[in-house]
Image 1 (tube, rainbow, N blue to C red):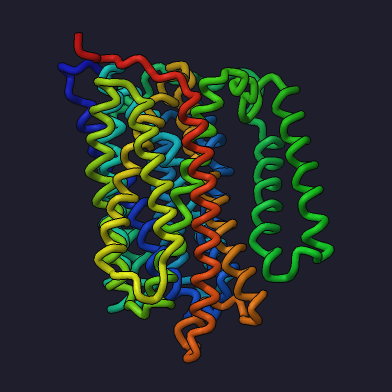
Image 2: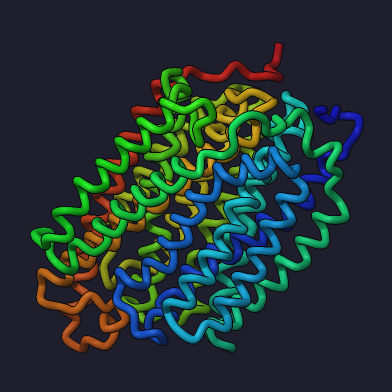
Length: 485
């Protein structure tokens, strides 16, 4: 059932969900600050270090839709608490990891938990909030993401400086345990399940899931390593045809079975397709700077991790404030104008980032980071609200999963492209693709090569952002559910 305004349970459920999303986002935003230190401690090149994030994001993408099926089978509360437990176990594994391989394995476990939590979070909010308040609920949820984005870099920077990067994951494991207890006590299965679709008929499409995970892994690995080993490498040349074959097999599989992992026929709905394209290109355009900025600030400009956290937290402040504002505005006035405004801001910010050099004033960087967060907050909430509104109430788990799949796919593509371009420039200039060496190069030539690579990254992301603006313009504006008369 859907909870009415008079019931107020929606705010209790939102509190429980917010604790969980706060925990997972603190982990994801904090690790960007810890990443340069982790790379230095484990002696990792930039492409290898990027796999700490890429492996995590690939896992989340692979888990999201199966998690929707799991929720259909056992209920959202059980599925949700299982995800939090996996996150905590994985975080402890990362903290205790004796090697890079073990660390990646533990991050995969941790990220599987994140995928389960993400799938259920949107579904729970969309179920317990009345239709005319859904934007408000999603806006409050996304503001929590912004607040966690504020806390993550600060916590990560201070903890890494004082106690080392492993201690950061001990803290996130503790937060996950608290969130698990809150979910067990506060989430009412009869209310958070709503009109969810009970799993019937054929089982989950594990073949489709395996094909999609393999396809993504092949493409990302090829993009991420091509610049380092050479695009004319036999393995890289072979990877792309293999990836397209896997893509073709995945599409054929999903169109030919009764219960596909993803019903691709939904993309015959033009407004929905443009909405998802807007989301993919938007996150692809707006995620690269999150990966690049800590390396720029720490390795090129010489700031300590704790200082980096304080500098980049301004973006999360902007996101937290304007996510809540845009959620309320989209409920009242519709979605498209806010999506367009936010995306244009993201493009302009990317253009600014392409001008970064050794002397760019820190105050100006902080200001533009705030503007970047504002742009993300303006466009993401209305886009998410529109996407959730298009799904059927009985299949809202899957709708929430697809929304998150699109976001994570955009994020992972952005990181892979950024890593590939910067690594390619470093290698072309005769340097090792080890970003920790930038600050140790007394000639400054390696820092110059990094900045040139970063410049091309942000130009490419600005072009992608322009594509998201064009796609967003084609989306039919959602009729406001509570518009003024």
